[in-house]
Image (cartoon, rainbow, N blue to C red; front, side, top):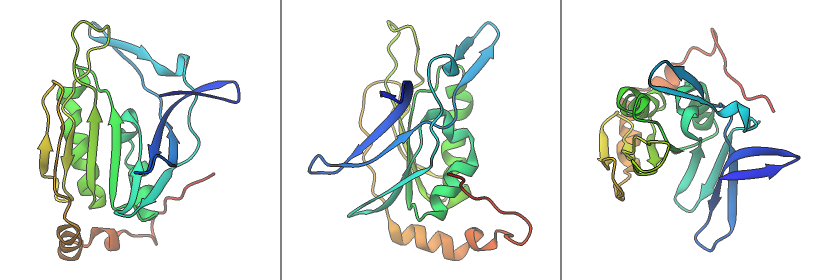
Length: 191
């Protein structure tokens, strides 16, 4: 959703609780500038300002992370959310019909596996009468990288069971979060 702040326009996702209270808001940090000759050309940075912080938020169901669309291509962002305790990450987005078939499921599954979290991608449905043709295919991956629910390009709702015990079991059997070599490399949020 466009948000005007300090004379700039941001692509912002607002998170509301069940009583309608604002829990968090996140402004997209990575802007989508693409030019694939003969297929798609788009420069988000012409009209949108970059967000400046990583956001996690708490609910009665746990801690969650939020990114927007192109942010999914940057594994560091999801890793920092998990470092802040996110147990699931939501990524609303609108990949197009060129990049979507090639990368939508791939990045969904990769970010889930990289961080051993449930990961949800949320897209608008495809409308061929609209100038931008979204790929659609909202879906959820479990921490093993299995897509446990997904729509096609049409309107739909994904309903999945999120199993915290399964997530813990995966993290115990393949403890990659513990195997990171912090003595060789680090990643930290700067704000």
